[in-house]
Picture 1: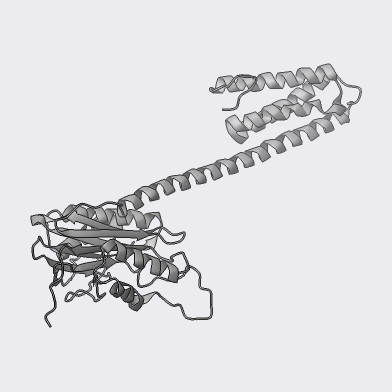
Picture 2 (picture 1 turned 90 degrees about the vertical axis):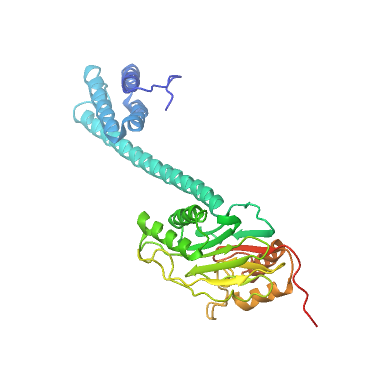
Amino acid sequence: MTTVLGHRPSRPAGQIAVLAFLLGAVVVVVVLVNRPDLAIAMYALIPIVLGVHWFGLRGGLVVAAAATLAFVAAQLFHPSTDLTGGDLWVAALNRSVAFVGVAVLVSLLLDRERALAGRVRAQQDEIAELESLRAALTPSGFPERPQLEFATSFTPADGLVAGDFFLVVEGPTDSTTIAVGDVVGHGLEAARCAAFVRAALATFARFTRDPVELLQLANAALVEHGKQGAQFVTAVCLNIGPPPAPEVTWATAGHEVPWFLDTGTPLPGGQVGAPLGVGAEALRLRPGRAALAPGGGILVFTDGLTEGRPVRRRDLGGALELFGEERARRVIQELDGAHPARVLESLVAAVTSFSGGTLADDLCLVAVRAEGRPPAVAD
């Protein structure tokens, strides 16, 4: 609140008293000096500005009218030789126009300042929420699972906040469930939708090992949440059975099929279904199954890997080139048997370099490898 003469009025009565005091002081100075050519009456602009600040345009106009009347009254009761007859009313009109103009101008400036301040606060709140959502969607840690080595990576796109997420949780009967998803779209709404779907998958994953059922439950929750037709979510779920001979069951709703970590070949079986959020009816998904041999691994990713590209095309006349599956497979095959973290680091470096240092889409990766050595190949 504005401080006046060392006092900071916080109530309307105190503010009105301050304005009346300032107007009175201006009138006294005008009467004592009695020199209209010095424009001492313009000191009334100070209470006018305060009136706008405290009470809005209406308050400023009231103070402006009071200042004009005070000027006229001062001249009538203590006339100046410089202002006689019609000159007094012309002077009063000039001052009233100046007073009202200042009140209107200050009101417009304050409205703009408050609108900008509100916009800045809203953006700060949105940034804070986005940072919180991003930390929840792509956490830095994950639970330890028996005889499995995990690595995760998330690289945000340039300037856009999207809805990529991953999930690694314990499932029933000592199994492990992995989920990776991507909301179609960008911004805060996409991140909120991703957080909702991730939370739904994390909840349901503790009660079922079936990835098809998991995706169907998440779809039902998404539609029930009122998001049908607004945002589609592609997602893939895997369940890795307990050791010593874990079987991987997977299903995908509009998402890329996971790859074997050392060869880059897609997991066998299964069929890509429709994305989540398309409709309330149960998704028609067909699961795939594969054995996870000792030392074997799986890579789960979003389309930021295969569709990696520069943020801005340098050659506007040429075709848009994507990082593509073949480049990704070459990186993977060159690191056959490497720790999952090293594989992900190499993939991120390759895509980022191909894209010129910044990505056009978020890149989310999860890699898992079973402990132990792969069986020896017979001669």
